Amino acid sequence: MDRVQIKAQGKAAMQANYLMCIIVAIITTISSGGISFSVGFPMGRLNSSSSSSAEDIPSEAIAAFFAIIGIMLVIFGIIFLVAAAINFLVVKPLDIGCRSFFLNNLNAPADINLIGLGYKMNYKRNVIAMLLSNIFIVLWSFLFIIPGIIATYSYRFVPYILSENPDIKPMDAIGLSKQMMNGHKWEAFVFDLSFLGWNLLGILTFGILNLVFVNPYYHSSSAAYYNAVKLQYSNSMGCMQSPEY
Image 1: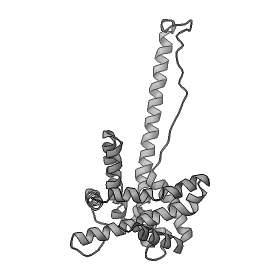
Image 2 (image 1 turned 180 degrees about the vertical axis):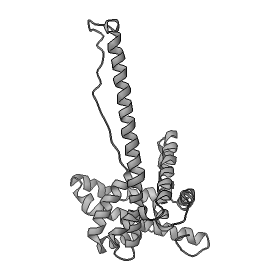
Image 3 (image 1 turned 135 degrees about the vertical axis):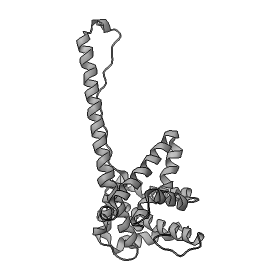
Image 4 (image 1 turned 45 degrees about the vertical axis):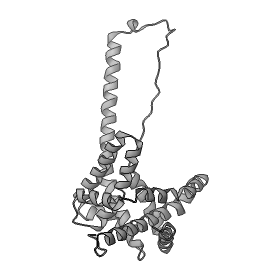
């Protein structure tokens, strides 16, 4: 793959529809990362030199402590489930629409209404496919960091495939992404790494450069990279390039 040519195509497409690309890139950055949250609270510790001991603590206080812990766990569990539901029912379908926008924008300035494609086109299928691919990534991550990273790159194209194939089944989209990424995972990693310098500059500008240039440039180039891999995959399968591959 000619990484320089792919990035040049992505940059040209971004510049041709600059404002819309910035807006969609912001949405894509949020949707592709999903919703995350962290809750922190101070942890106390028992002082061994304290004059009081565990035997001095009333049983009612111990019961109340565990009751509070139980309530906190229930609350955190509810928050997690709500966040996960929002992520897969609202955010992930939006990610599919954003990928569709950047794909279409490679050929001509795309309409921002394309970001709603994930809701309009086979919504249930989209939710299931994105949920399954994320579950697989998490399961692989349990083995260690490297398998999780490999799985992430294996399923990289799932949102693009879903956006182009209205009738494809969830597992077929996941399987097709794995096939397309076979032999391209390291290449894709290097492709992402080539944006490291831009991201470092973005940090120095407190994220302003990422907002107005790096993110739309990256997402537009990523769409161009997907198209390049798709064309190569189609040619290797001995068929004409089409949404069905």
